[in-house]
Length: 124
Image 1 (cartoon, one colour):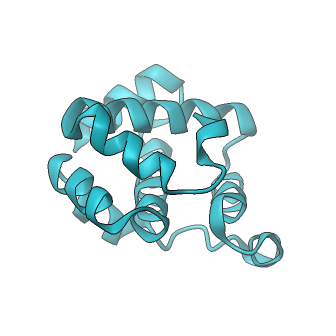
Image 2: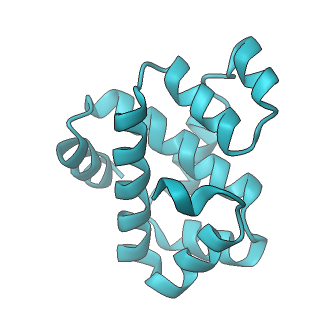
């Protein structure tokens, strides 16, 4: 997983430790919100993804603003901002996360995951 985190950190300019946390949060969001079969296939294909999700998916919490956002894509955005990322960094991280997922799980599987989550497509 460290190779994947470093790849994403290098591509986005985000500190590797923060990139790891944010990647875990994003993958956890996809697992929670996406099409079950496609998400499970995607997570199984990415080395270390399941461990990263269990380690970081609950991080950030979102606090009061996350609660107001009501979860979903807006709640994830609040969690990531709470972790210290700006909107540009979040967008770059989302694009890199999807690119890495496609690299391991294939474009068709990842496109199915993205299509199953309302509003996600506009951020990647």
